[in-house]
Length: 280
Image (cartoon, rainbow, N blue to C red; front, side, top):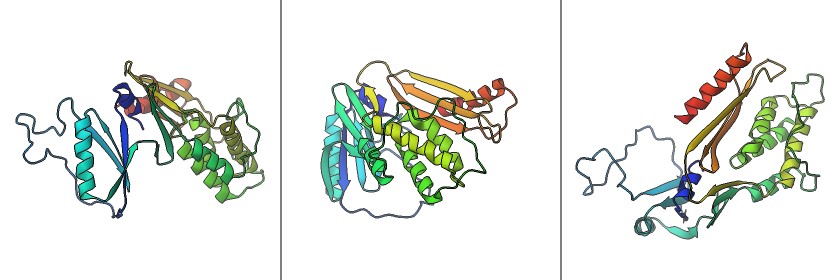
């Protein structure tokens, strides 16, 4: 969904096809190259694979296929050619894809994971919990807590994994989810309580998501910061960044740095370097 704001800014609709029969294969060992189709090679631009001002973008995951672009006629030709070659169902406008709910309106494209979020709450018996207004306590520092009471390792990993996938549309929980993921090897009660607090926060913010507004400028902005020596156990810092393309966030990260920095400036440089790498 990193290109969501580009699609909404250009008012491109997104459609979905479902492949009725799909076959899974192993990893390709060969290199795959894309060329202009035979008979349609444009002289002087042989190295290009897209025609100017007309484009169709296709995304395929196993048997779910979505496509968008700038030309309605190309949509129809692509859909017809695919349905002739494969047994497919035309699902029309995209509404749900890989656990992500998509609403396409005159305002733009809104993505969320409300249903998936409710499934998580039900799975971990938190559907009737009391909600909180922030996902973590202010100034909280999680430690390994060697003397703390151990909790079910499997349940904790399942909870963290479920929350990780939820960060696809909820950048505001990226930092705290990354934080609790550091203790999956030997989780203690304080770590489980921190994970449950995230679920309590989600209970009260189930309708939150990302809105990519239609029209407007699509300038790319990047923001980065670091938490110097934020981990009390190993004194490592945490890097964080977020990128916005116009009105909506398109990429975000919160991750502990692999090195021990010796100053706030060094930690900031490490975070800025990771951010700069992502921008390219």
